[in-house]
Amino acid sequence: MNADRLSEADPPSAQKIPLSVLLPGLAGLIPFVVLSLSEVLALGLPPIISLLAFNTYGAVILSFVGAIWWGLAAAAGPRAEGLDVWLECCASLDWLVCHVGGA
Image 1 (cartoon, one colour):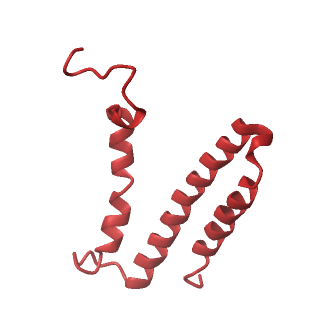
Image 2 (cartoon, rainbow, N blue to C red; image 1 turned 45 degrees about the vertical axis):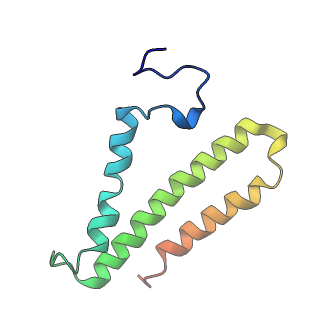
């Protein structure tokens, strides 16, 4: 077996993440980090704006997670009993996060 190639027998968790997936995934953390540290970094954002932007970005990410779950449920077909409750929790939490700041 070549040292820089994983065999098909290796578990999926041992396979390398493609760079085209890894970089956007890591870039998605930038708003969380910047908005979390906005007071420490003295970015000039009012705290309420930082909080609302942080919550809204979190809600957007949560909506993507909900979409992934919908896709998994659709692929599973009738075997996905009970998954619909989890999907509704994602949507409800998403709505709540968007309205926490009282905007």
